[in-house]
Image 1 (cartoon, rainbow, N blue to C red):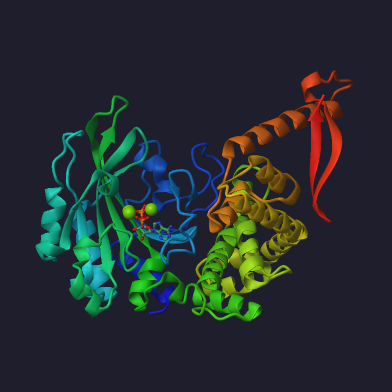
Image 2: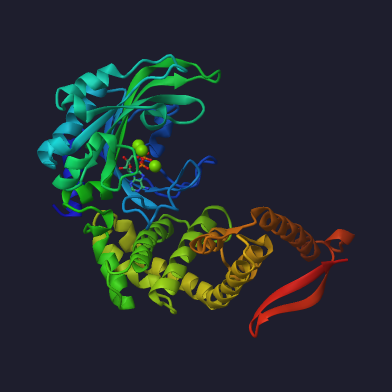
Length: 482
Ligand code: ATP
Ligand code: MG
Ligand code: MG
Ligand code: MG
């Protein structure tokens, strides 16, 4: 099956079990102070679970655009380096709001995976909550008994609170979960180590694909649990991981979700995927990040200098720099990938097609503006790296990172990433101090613009004392407090 057929088969399957198919909620969240981006399928149903919103449909299924780059779920560092975490991904989900519970959820998950998708049973593992003394909860024997109908005991695994107990927050709905993992290793490798020993162990080919959450408790403010009046099911399956399992691949990037994008970048840069580790990471990072950027813009979040907008700008600049350093792109190139992305995903997400022109324009402008300073910033950073290494230091001054941020538009995490590639770290305290100082400066600067007259505090006054030239065209601006 191709990826579009795989997604459709999921929705059709749950429609046949009387689920209403709904659209993905926007990935960008505008009205929740606790969350900038949708990070799980259940987000849009939060108010139903909290009992604040009426239940319109008892059964729902969809494919939700998710982004995990900040807060509780931040997978950014993994992306491109591993083969199964993305910044933006689709989470296929089915929900029961006070309707069916563990039995149907597990039966249907099994039926879908083994009868519709025909994944080999001997390669599937199910985890169940082992219980927690702290919460005075025993093992989830109900879920275990249901899995025992389908799986031998060796393929059922007990999991701890971290992996197998889901909570919405410090208080609120929560409950045990059962996860399904799939072992995609070769037969030879499987003989050497049992799959069950690799579950939840960051093995790139023994991976979690589906999480079935059974909401049956409410966590009260005092930390204790009470039974919920209505029990709910909330499931989330990683679409790109499912495609990898279905298409006989060992990396999400080898599926038809990513290959057209990777091949387009490879062609544009005259590189080949699969020949060089650094180039491959760059190709994966860019293929991943263009999805995030395109969907964020589509859903109403333009790159900008603060909050959610800065998250998107950071991701875009991260991709541009990977392209610049490892693929040799000196001119905007990301915007040309939007067309390819639309060919892959536009069918299911028509909003992408509608916004194509806007996305391309915004991405190209962002690329242009960053590329203008990128070269000088990288040159400055290279000099700092050489100097730090020659002095046998491991820590780079936060002032330099701030200069890169302020003058060259390098987000801190980008500077950190480049330093990490060189086994160096940044002095974050110094960076924060510089940032704070700049905020104070700009506060008085705005005061000057808006007030009739302003008394400037002595502390805020800085005298320009000249440039420090690191090379003919790389300079650091020096000020002194007066
Ligand atoms: P992992 O342990 O692999 O990080 P998770 O336990 O954080 O996954 P859940 O919160 O349970 O993930 O989300 C449900 C499903 O979404 C997972 O089973 C997985 O298939 C998928 N998923 C989670 N994070 C990502 C990601 N960053 N990229 C792609 N798919 C993901
Ligand atoms: Mg995770
Ligand atoms: Mg997990
Ligand atoms: Mg999980």
